[in-house]
Length: 303
Image (cartoon, rainbow, N blue to C red):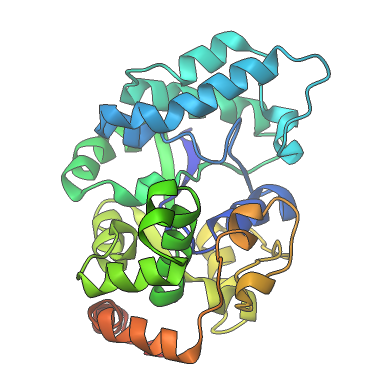
């Protein structure tokens, strides 16, 4: 039998974390292993991505040597194999190959198959993989895995602000150049620059060409609209009875509830977007709303 694998292909700042927690903790549908995001596929595509992964490698090695270490995401520790340095070294090799990926998820499935239906890879960098790379790896992965791809989306304007606000927080240089996170966000839009994470249709079409892929609108899933939860359950052939809370729904900006394990959400927005801000963003991102409507024939967000 092929190993059942869910690939989460972003998008970042769209509620990938609560979706991951829904599958792993609330429903026990699938399990990710040591980390939600190992960025293995992206590191295979782009060797420079080791810089992203090195931080987690050093942290895991250090923590695994700490007596009575408690994983900061304790819900993962049962199957995290974080005390096995040999496997950590193998997972975080500087030059991973597709065989590294295949071996990791097939072995992990053997650990969890009595309790979970799938293993899953929820690396947000999967959303950045280009079509030509997916075309190359899809036939190989399909020999080993029964693959389903989940892609979750959020209002494009709000998503981009959350991403850039987080980037602003993490960059002293940006803080010197711009008085506020919204100043940076507006300047970014005025320059006609859009992060790759904003290109929803490009990513969806790339994955959908090679894998069974479902699009999930974050606001619809957590608002109970359009039978979104039932559609997800049918796609996975698994009863999704409960959703993990989502700090991005309803949209509360700086007042977002501090749900457990979701600091990446409730800490991202430094300011609240006014209606004027939202209209400003929609003007510059009209293309992406139009592309969504042209492809899916519906519009889940105000535009």
